[in-house]
Image (cartoon, rainbow, N blue to C red):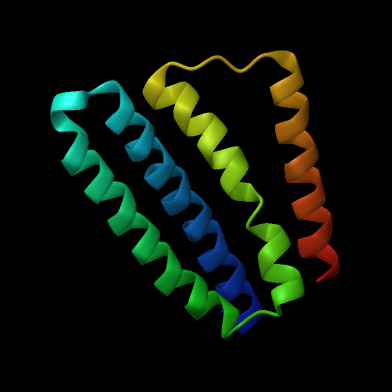
Length: 110
């Protein structure tokens, strides 16, 4: 596996980890009795993301890694729909498709 491909995979994993961290923080607002564990989980996931993102930056230029990080918005939207039951109206789907298309273009030209 090439160094660049590994870096891109690490950024994808970071996007998923960040989305889970955001969902944990949202759950902390919905479950007041369980707030501290959800907040701790979210903060821990952000720490894991920082370590993984640093590893990605060892393999990618920031000009590639940072824009690919926008996939965290996609992961958060899809994860919140799946895990929290939030809705995804047409405008949100169009935004998700725009982000994915932009990241695909960036990755193919990277």
